[in-house]
Length: 323
Image 1 (cartoon, rainbow, N blue to C red):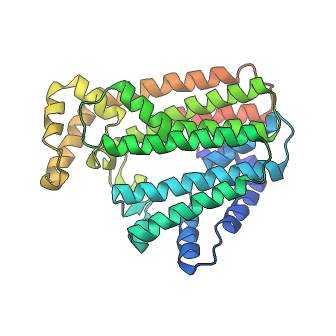
Image 2 (tube, rainbow, N blue to C red; image 1 turned 45 degrees about the vertical axis):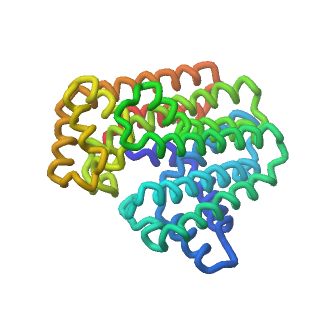
């Protein structure tokens, strides 16, 4: 089953959001308009708008207010991807050339800035101060997470706490904010907002852990980028942490990998193969499952209706995801 099937009943609302995203990225400057459109057309799961739509159903659902939040959050996510690709010198994302690859670093950075500005502009139509506080705090944390990731590249002397804090900022908080802001836009009760925020946080942690696992276990065709790309970029993910703990010599091998330009493709594939032979993948899935169970527990006291069932199914899908 594909993730999109778990929320197939939201197609009408997602189509509205997709049209709004297209309108939001229109620019007077040809290059900005063209590069932003290519990024949007590259696709994506639109998981953040999905969470906004679902959590907005725990209050007074108004598609115009919900759309404002969903578009803003997806634009912020898109902008972060453009900036990430420049930092990582990534030529491909989802099997397609990145904006950085097509237009160069400068245009890519300004495209990301433009999309981010559009996100903030779009959000101004929502009058609730609480929503803007959540969004601004999330963006501060997101920025800190990106800087930490740059700082820690090829630093193999990290621990579990470092990793969890980084993925919290990189992924989980934006998903948590999507859930909470959907509830705020629908004027849902405060208790619901907090439970949905925690659900989104736990889901986001699990989702990123599994992404990091799949970066090791999936093929390039499945990933749309080279397998083991995180390791190649010097990013210490959970499987790498567990592999270093499981096999002491693995950490010594990685220390010789501090300069990837001096490592051949064959040597790099050996590093990936050794990691797969350890218990790291199984241990990583176990941590992901713990977060999923916590996410499901947050939903228990919420009203029983279709949105809750869909949130439960999404958690189930993420738990079974192997590609």
